[in-house]
Image (cartoon, rainbow, N blue to C red):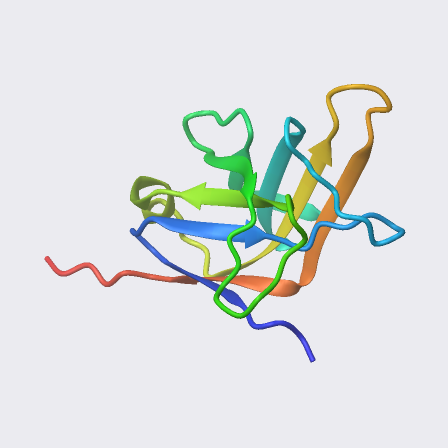
Length: 135
């Protein structure tokens, strides 16, 4: 069964969470200080970029940041666990014309050993709910 799609209401402030960051031996990965680049594309890993987030955003990108995990009531996290937060603004999403996309995230450690990780949400779709404009 595929995960439920992540829905974004066009023209609103939103946050996408990237959580449960683990390495190959299931140890928690703390990406604090790492460079983050996230992109939404119609097809995973290729095609035109429909939306982007970065830890050093340009004026057309949303902000990607690392912060403490914020679980819902009843959920547990490892003490000190960090998540990646992708922030979107109304201005950012109002310009989008797409309806569905796939999310890919690339993170890079800034110091030796310069580890890198690709986080692909191949089975998770981003759904943009368009706002009806009345004249």
